[in-house]
Structure formats: structure tokens, C-alpha cells
Amino acid sequence: MIEPQRALAHIRMSVQSELTDFLLQQTQYLGEIGSELTPVAEAMNEYLLDSGKRLRPLFAYAGYLGAGGSEDSAVIKAVASLELLQACALIHDDLMDGSDTRRGKPAMHRRFESIHEQEELSGSASAYGASAAILLGDLALVWSDQMFHSAGLSQETLVRSLSVHDEMRVELMAGQFLDIHEQALATSSVARSLKIARYKSGKYTIERPLHFGASLAIADERQRHTLMTMYSEFGLPLGEAFQLRDDLLGVFGDPATTGKPAGDDLREGKRTVLMAMTHDRANVAQEKIIARYFGVEELDSTGVEALRTIITETGARQHVEDLIEKLTLTAQDALNRDEIDSSAHALLDELASIAVRRSA
Image (cartoon, rainbow, N blue to C red):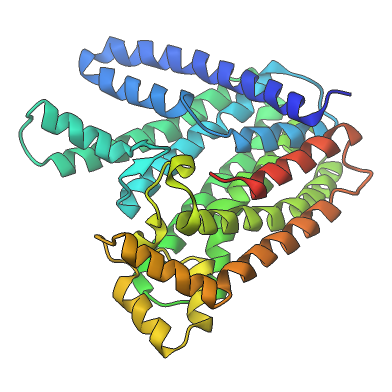
């Protein structure tokens, strides 16, 4: 049996190849519409091909193998389409958050804002950048459908998997709205923050891709439902652990690794589980410091360090670490089921480790 790291690397390369081929076709099509779309094609190619962990396609393909599926290039292309859904989410998320960078490069709205300034176009550069990001995010969503539908799946398989595919996208958008609504409430709730973590990131990163993979492999409805239930027992706690790791990286991550400025979530005033737990434990003096610095757009290193200190001193940081460990163990215990094909156990276990032990 191939060791899981090598197997995942092979799947990742196959996903990259499918994305490259698809984007080549779309770049040619955009070029036929007009040369003005060249910056759009260049931005999308760079955004999708230059980086990315490919977690969603990897979980989907592992879910497919765990459901008894055999190696299939059409399935690779179908799961690769999830990277385009991810691109839509990230491009729009950066715009909504007002983030300057993504993976160490300008966020999409900042990229097109710079193009506007460099070419000395008329009107507002920021409005041009925001409009471009909305449209490119929408384009990525359309492309995800195109890639999925053109993967070469049988009509039966395509129809069978559509319900999971659509449900995943609805949950993602619902989670994004819950996130912006929580920011608008400007309050703090661990329960609400956990719900946002589940819907905004956890479900569409792990649980639903696993379900998607199972739907591509299993025709029998009862068998498919049984396996999906098991995948939920694995994917839901792991998805929450994944988002909690994101919360920690958004505050304590190394910018050289995360590709984002130090303490970016603090600057944006993100109402994460980490911050909700910090509020629950903070004393009056600490709350005053939080009120002074949290969500300040021009937050400097002094403010970031003051907030980091409070998060650590209240025990919130360690509590989140402990929760990640607990959720990960719960997920791993759920893998010990005979219904999940043994060939996928090592892959899923390795993916679980990647999801929660990462530094970016």
C-alpha cells in the first residue's frame, strides 16, 4: 500500500492538472470576448494555481475511495471543481473583511484597485476593485459548476451528487451571512461563534466534501445514507477543529507562513470562538484593553501584543487548543468503522492531521 503522504501528493497533482487544463480553456474563451479580460484571466490563474492546500478535493476524493470508488479521472475533475467554490468564498470573504492580503499577495479587490491606479483609470479605484472582486468571485462560482458538469460523470452519478453539491453551497453562503451578522451584533457568544465556525468553514471544508465523494461512488440510497452518517461523525468535529485552528492562526500565526499580517483577525474585529472565550474569562481591566484595541483598523504591533497577552492570560488560547485536540480525537474515533473502505482510513487520518496541525 502506498503511504498516505505519497497518495495525497499524487491526488493533489492530479487535481492541479485538471484545474490547469480547465483554466486554459476558460482563459482562451475570455480572450475571445476581449483583451480587456486578460487581467481577469491572469488573476484567476494565479489565484487558483500558484498556491492552495487542496483540502476540499482531497477530502472529497478520500470520501469517494472510502465509499469503495476506484481511480477515475472524471471523479478527479469533479472534486477539483471544489477549488473554484473555495476561490469564490475567499475572494468575497476578503472583500467583506477588508483584508489587504491573501497567501502573501494582494487580495483580489486590492489587486484590481492597484490596476485602476496604475492605469490611471477614471472613477474610484476602491469601487473598481470591489466590483471586480464581486464579479471574479461570481465567475469562480459559475466555473465550479461548469467544471463539475463537464467532468465526464455518468448522468446518473451527476444527478445523484447534485443535491449534496447544492446543499454544500447553500450552507457556505448561510455561514458567510451568519459571520457578517455576528460582526454587526458586536456581541460575544461562544455558541453562536461555534455555529458560524461549523457553517462558514467546517461543513464545506470536510463534511460535505466527504458526502460529495460518497455520492459519486454509491448508487444505493440506503448504503449511501449510512456512510454519509459515518462521515458526518468524522467530518463535523474535524471541521470545527479546522476552523478553531484558523482562529488561532488569525491571531498567533506567523505572517511569513499564513500570508496575512500579524493579528489580522484582531484588526478586523473577528467574532471568533477564541475571542468569545476571551470575553467570557476577561476581568474588567482586560475588557477595557480589549475595547481599546479590538477591531481598530490601524492596530499596530503594540495593540496586537496587548490583545495576544490577554487571550493567553485568560486561558482562552489553551482552552481552544484543548478543544481542537478533543474534537480531533472524536473525529478519529469515528474512522474505526468497517463500512469505510480500509484503503481510505490512512488517507483520512493523514488529512485530519493536516487540517488541525497546520501553520497556515
